[in-house]
Each structure stands twice: as structure tokens, then as C-alpha cells.
Amino acid sequence: MRRKKQRLALACSAVLLSAGMLAPTYDSLVKANPASSIMEKPPVSGFISHDELTQKLDQIEQTSQGNVEVEVAGYSNQGREIYKATIGSGDKVAFIQSEIHGNEKVGTKALLDMIKQIGSNNSPEMRQLREELTIVAMPMINPDATELNRRGNEMTWDEVTSAFPQLQTAEPSWNYYTYKNQYWDYESNPGFDVNRDFNPDLNYTPQPEDFPGSSSEPGWYITPESQTVRDVYKDLQDQFGTVDVFVDLHHQGEYVIDGTDDPVTLSLSGVFVPHPDTEEGEKYSEYADQYNVDFSKQLNVAAYDALQQMGNSPFGNISLYPQDLDLPGTALGSFALNGSGTVIFEITGQTQDFGQKKMGQLNKAVKNGLYGILNSFATGKVHDLDVERYDDIPLTDR
Image (cartoon, rainbow, N blue to C red; front, top):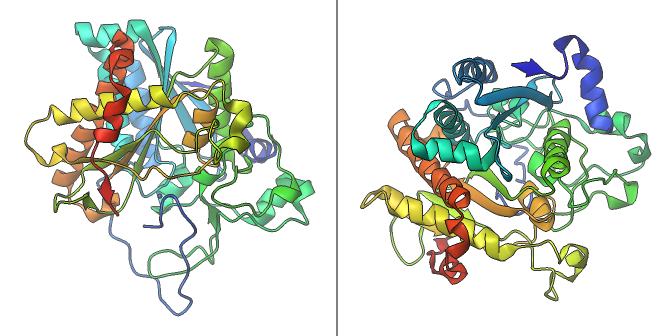
């Protein structure tokens, strides 16, 4: 495993990096109940820790016969490695990340399984993926939250203002967690929702007048985790001109298909901001020429079709995530405006809510959906899919 930075430099590197969805996943912060006490959270011993991630990626790289390259792309605020695995040498780029929220864990296991299979399997299908695509996978991009089994990272506002002195007079950002309820104690150990810290201006530097901001406004790249993802994205732009596909693996609550009692397995979406050509999206007009929502919808249809082929099972219950969103501060919103076809996987429930059998089933569903995207992208068949079929995906009853 090649490391661009060494652990000896952790203390300095974390500062340098800073300088350079149980809560509603698309709305506001969870409100604290000051009178409530902290409950003991369910164990997550069956899921992948950061140390296990390091070991598994090392093993995958060593057994891939040169097909997988693993690097340290950056460090979390607490100094944990954020990894990047690259598979393939094609001109088409697919960037997939998981666990931007530390209690949304199924995507990381699915992504590791996928990296291993594509990197080591010599079937015609896997060879085609390696030849046609460059796949960049970043599992567990918020490892501090992973270790705490919570949504937000581990970082104080004082650390932000230390890294960005121009923010000394600014209010803390709206996505800064300091509440305390029956599950989480951010009051004594604050952190940020990293998935609200992105900005479509990839060269943006924080300005005090942009705080505290809101859900419908861009973020600021004040966390090392978002900065690392942004830097990987920019590097890919420099190498390939564009990042064709961006997929983000999340979890949501437990819902049913609209108009039925069928429990949702996972929800998909390719729409995270209003179209720049509309009145609602006029504020994004500078990105109009590169925004390609039709391609995003085709990628979602490819995932949906692959999941429907699993037959009569709970994993046919795939729904469409809410479409009336304006989230430029998410990675998906920011990268869509930069020209990427985007897909979100919102897997049902938080990982600690289910047993290992359920986790295995959900893991399989995520992998099938991802392969649907990658195979159709590698072969070019995705461009033949009817964009209007996106609207035929059943809605989620929320």
C-alpha cells in the first residue's frame, strides 16, 4: 500500500488539510432534548472498523496481481487514514464512496467486496470493467465517525477557526452538531455533518459572510474529510477532464413503497439540485453547460434494472428518493453541478438496526446495483436507456 503521507506527520497534516442522512438526511439538524439521557447504542462488532479496513485493503492490493492500487488520500481530523483504491485503466471514470456518515456501514462492506472481485476476478465481465473504466473507490471516508458509530465527524468549531482565522467572528456552521439526545452526545464531543461541507466551486475558501449557511446553500470545505474527497475529485478532473460517474452510498430510515405496505430495500436518485435552466435553479446558471441530469437518470435506471433482475424478493422494492431537493452542500449536489452523472444509494435503516443476515442481503443488493451501473457504463449501453423510465421508479412513502 503506497502512502503519500506518513503517520509521523499526522499532527501537522491534519492541520494542513483543514487549512487548504437517524437525522433527516436532506433537511435540518436533529434537535436535542436536553433532559434526555444517553442510551447505550447497539453493538456494531459485526461491521468493519478502520483497522480492519486497513488490513482488508492491504490484502486486496497484495492479491490483485497489480490490478488494485491503494493509497492514503488524506487523513481525518483525528489522524486516521482515508483510503483511495484505484482499479482499471480505462478512459471512463467512476468514483464511488461510502460511509460519509459513520453509522451507515453497509456500503463499505459492499464496496470492499466489489474492489476485491473486480481486481482479482478474470472473467470476461471483470476484465472489461478494468479495460474500459478507471474505478476509484473510497470506502469509509469519515473514519472518526465510524469509530464512534455516529453520523458526524469529531471536530470542534475552535479547530475550524484555528485552521481558518478569517472565521474568528463567524457563527458556527448550521451543520455543526452540539446537541445531546437519547442516542448521541455531541454536546461533550462535537462534530460536523461532513456531507454538508461541499461546494460546487471546488476552489472555494471559507469566507465569514457565508456562515452559518443553510441546507440549501453550498458548504465550505472546512473539514479534512470533505477536503480529501474534493482533492481526489479534482485530481481525477486533471487526469481525465471530467469525473463521469459519482456514486455515494448512504442509509435512510425505514419506509415503504408509495401506495403499498412493501418495505423499501433502498432508494435511488440522480437529482440533488434544481436544474440550472429553471427559475429555481437560476443561481446555478454558471454550471448549466456541464450539468447533465439526463445521464444521472440513465445511471439510476441501470441500477434499478439490475436490482429488479434479482427476482421476486424483498430486493425488488426499490424506490425513488425525494426529488424536490436543493442540496449544493452535499458531495452529490456539488459534483453533479461539475458535470458528473450522480447516483445515491439510500439503504434501508441504520446498520445497527438489523442482524447479520439482513446485512448480507442488503450488501448483495448494493453490489448488484453498483454492477448494473458499472457494466452499463463500460459497455456504453447506459446511453441507450430511456431517460423517462426514471420517473417510473416508484416513489418512497415518507
